[in-house]
Every structure is written in C-alpha cells, then in structure tokens.
Image 1 (spheres, rainbow, N blue to C red):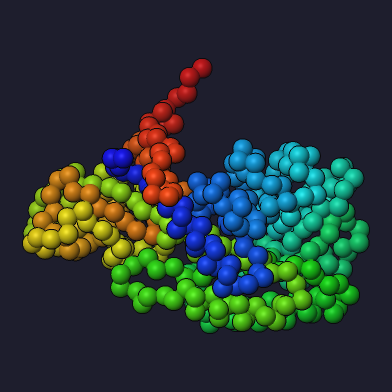
Image 2 (cartoon, helix red, strand yellow):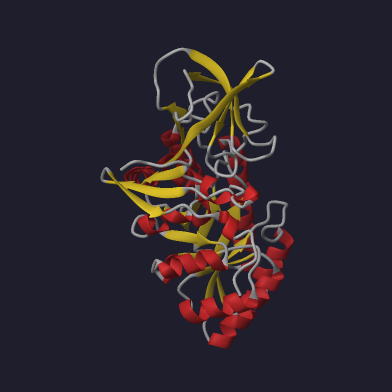
Length: 377
C-alpha cells in the first residue's frame, strides 16, 4: 500500500509486545493505559492491559463504542460534570473505579451512588501541588468521615508528571508509602489498592543517553515492593505507546535564505509533539527515504504560517529534494492528540495501523476547514 503523507502509522504488533514486556518484567503489577496518550490504540489493548484511564466524557464514549468492559474503566479527570456522572453511573453502576479530585467530586459521587442505591469504588487522588487531586489534610478528613459516604475507598492514586528520573520516583514513593501508612494507622483503614503513574522516561532525541527500559522497570518494581500488601496498578501512556508510532511526511519545498538551507514539509508542529522539545534544538529520531549521497544540514520546517513551526535546525540530510519522505519515530504517544490541528485549517493526517505486516487505513484525511467554519443549519 502506498502511504500518502502526512500520516501516522501505529505498529500494533510492536504495541502488544511492548505491553507484554512491561507485564513480564513487573510481575503481578497491573497496567492501566492512559488513553489520552493515543485513543486509536484502545481497541487493540482491550485484551492486553488491565484497565483504561478515562479522563473525559469523550474518552468514555470511545470506550463505550469499542465495548471496553465496564470493570476496566478508571474514570478520572479534574472536571466531572454532574450529568455525565449520572449517565455513566446509570450505565456502568459500580463496575468502574471512580477518582476523587475535590470535595465537590466526593459529594457528587456520593449523591449519585445514593441515587442509584449502590456503593461506588473510588480512588482519592493525592495532589502534587497543582490543580489535580486533593491535599493531604483534605484526604485525612475524607478518610476520617468515610463511613457517611456510599463510597468504598480502595486506596490512593498519585500521578505527578512524566519523563521522571528514578531518583525522583524513589523519593515520591517513599513519601506516598509513609503517608499511606499514616492514614491506615491513624484511621484504622486498610487500603486494598495503590495506583501510581510513574512517568517513566522515553527516548525521543538523538542527543540523549539511551534509556534501558528493563532497568527502569526492574528498579521501579523493587521500589514498589513496600506496597506488597496492596494491588498495585501503574497508569502508563507515553511509556506504552510512544515506540509503536511513526509519523510520515515529505519535503514539499527547499530554499536557501541568508545562507540557511530550509526544507518545508507537508506536516509540522500541528502533527508532531515531542515531549521537551524546546526551540527545535533537539534532534528526534528520523529516517530519510534516501540513505546515501552528499550530506548537508537543513532546518526542517512545517507548513504552518508561524515562525514557531520549526521541527529541527541544522539536521543532516542526504541530497534533500522535493518529494523525499521523512519518517519521525517514537510518535505513538500524544502527537496524534496534542497537535494544534485546527490552526490554519490544515488537513488532519491519515491514520494507518500495521499488524501482521498488513497495513490498514483506519482514518482518512480530515479537512479541518469544515470544523473552522459555520456549520450547516
């Protein structure tokens, strides 16, 4: 199949093998896929991961359309609207796990549980000093008053960021363990679960030291051993999905301006979003269709009318010519959902899946100008 550009390709065999590798390394630890990283992969992970982190009504609708088992849903999110929660609880009852990120969410979930005459299973999210979760003093009040709510508190949930070093994770887990023990001892409660987002690092740029994934996972497993009396669930998105994705684009123009060689591609920052890329000074992993010839350094820019649309400066390419294809690796997470797709009404890329060496188009080009104009009456 001829792959037109711009487009994403997600390698499903690589994805599934990635999850198997993670689970084999971690042992009994459960894996939750944060579907915000790439919702196109949910269907292929239903029988592979233990649960899905669902953070919006739209993500819930995707799970519903794909028949994700209700007991595989962890309904999270900093904003839970009353009508959405009423509808989801009406459909799913007590099968999902619901998260509490504020006292208002606590009261909402309690009201809806009582309305349906059921007990909802919940996690209380620990804040890391931002808008997510609740602070430790508030958690103490929630735990001390737990008997008045129609909620079963399974345990704590913590997610503080991504691309973290092991030293930071170690410090974080030690604190969370001490806080968990304090709650259990002070309020005579035993938490059954502990959900944690480790934010393990992924290699995105050529200049970075190569990360040993097995070493990261093994170290994490040892750090989590202190929680051995609980069912541990790790929420992962980037670490699961990044390596299965490719972004295909092609050079559509070349020029030299003030002694700088520019090549323009038919994609750009509206399609590519690498974590930590600042001022386009880090080189992502790129495969050029032509693999020999004279090398020259090019500044690769996208097709948006903004000076911000620079992918990488001074990147070596072989005899770069119009029509040459460039493949950006490790784009399986976030690029497909975080790109500024509607800017300048550029088309949204095709999406392909590769499985058993077969390529299938799963979403055709979307003309975003239709979204950026007055709708039909």
